[in-house]
Image (cartoon, rainbow, N blue to C red; front, side, top):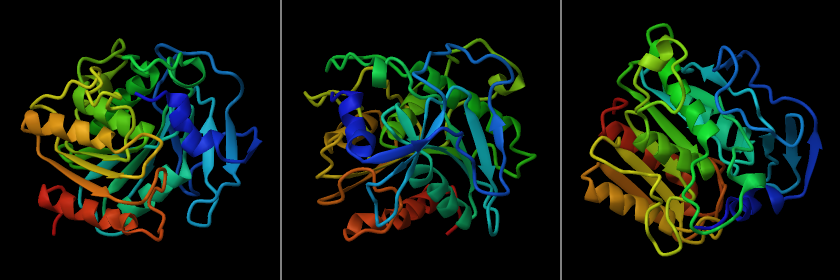
Length: 312
């Protein structure tokens, strides 16, 4: 398994950046909601204050924004812009558990979801998340889990189900979607939704944290270099139906991430759909590009229709 720091290079370290010390703000008209009412469990030290970093490395002709040193996780709820299908998706931006690509793999995903009648819940989870990133010892046999990030994911799933009626969401149609490291978090919450990794806080933690469906987009660190599944990801029949997408020239994480996870899903008889493309690289989000892989949102929406999450 490649080190998270190496994986991060494809998104952050290899890009020329300039930073402003500021907290990320959601799209106008939407409010960030703290997911923890009091002190966060397993709080980890960070190197400095929360910052927003704008890249000079363009993706589809545009810069992207990254939040780092996130110690107070929040979720931002985006209501459907048209007819409400009742479905909802919690989105996990990527960034190697060092930063969060809040627009490229966050708000832009929410715009696509809400335009298709799906409520989007954008999670700003804690980063850097030990033991990865700046605390990573970079050994290929690391079996560790980014505990704070997974705790934030479990907590958010419970909160969304608790407020499902209020937010006009079908509690049986709540899924997850993540990119790169966020794709790994998708697999983690899909296989480790119980028990909670933290002491229950309130009624939200009595709700199920299991996603009803999952989309892992160019996921990382599901497979080791010998093509075995990361043992933290314990696939079972209870793992939700999953959509996988990756490019063969993804040299940050490698196409074997999706291949190995798909094989595990198939072995457990979990419904899954995988799309592999010759070209596309890594960290392209939903932005249009010159390769066919940029049309993947249409495939994902067709899959959501096939599994009955949204109407045809």
